[in-house]
Amino acid sequence: MDPFSNKVDIPPARKSLGQNFLLDKTALNRIVSFLPSGSSGLVIEIGTGTGHLTKLLCGRFQSVVTIEKDDRLIEWLYHQGHLPENCRLIHKDVLEVSFVSIIKDMGCRKAVLAGNLPYNISSQIVFKLCAEQEVIPAALFLFQKEVAERITSSCSRKTYGVLSLVAQYFFDVKKVMDISPNLFRPRPKVVSSVVLFERKKAGPCTKCFHTFLRVVKAAFSQRRKKITNSLSHQLKIPKKDMAEILKNVGIDPSSRAGDISLEHFIFLSNTLGKTGKFHGRLA
Ligand code: SAH
Image (cartoon, rainbow, N blue to C red; front, side, top):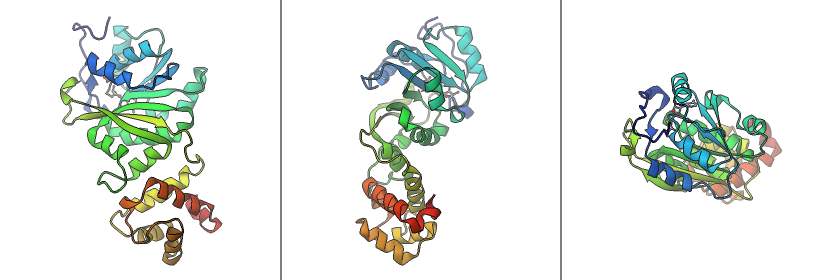
């Protein structure tokens, strides 16, 4: 049966699984239109829900793999029988799957990700996207507006922090549209935003990401403190040495984490990573 037909009864939503179903065909079509035009092979969807977005993805991609954790929804989806032939439904927790393995199993080398995400695990999904970015050229996700702002924020804004830096290390990120709570069932309390992630062509080094993450987390663990103090304390590097390194990479030692750009954080963590003396502590 067509999922957009008025005759379809939607199962009651489970709050604990972040279920807010987006059923509006016009909004969904617009969302799908933001997927990069070059991508048409394989898409992995996170959170099948009632399968409305899934159906549109199936029309746009050769193959769709869609991941859903809720057994009750899996049963409902099979019963409705509206998932097209080019769709494979995986009954698992997305945080426990390997995108790399799924892509390999499908005989592909890369895949685009998409999904109206369960909002309680949004940040974890961004971290997972970064961990497996080598096989993911693009992703299109719905977040709570406030989370979308943190992801796309630039230096010196209130929303700038670990999530912005992690997302922007590998990806160009852009908020492409807002979606009114009225278009969801049940209606969430907040506005949602769609964010497009496009992997940077000449992105920074993959191997250095671990050190970058360690440095950024250390810097923001006390975001109001001077950067020299927070880094020297967290990374156990003497203050004098830390101030010297900061100066060498062009960062004012008395600045705060929120005023340091992505480029400066990359330069700093690469320098710390290369300094043999600190290597053991940062690994
Ligand atoms: N894409 C659908 C559903 C969005 S709601 C739509 O737009 O209508 C989020 C979906 O993610 C729900 O179906 C929920 O059951 C599922 N979900 C929640 N946590 C999950 C997890 N850890 N792994 C996989 N799916 C999950």
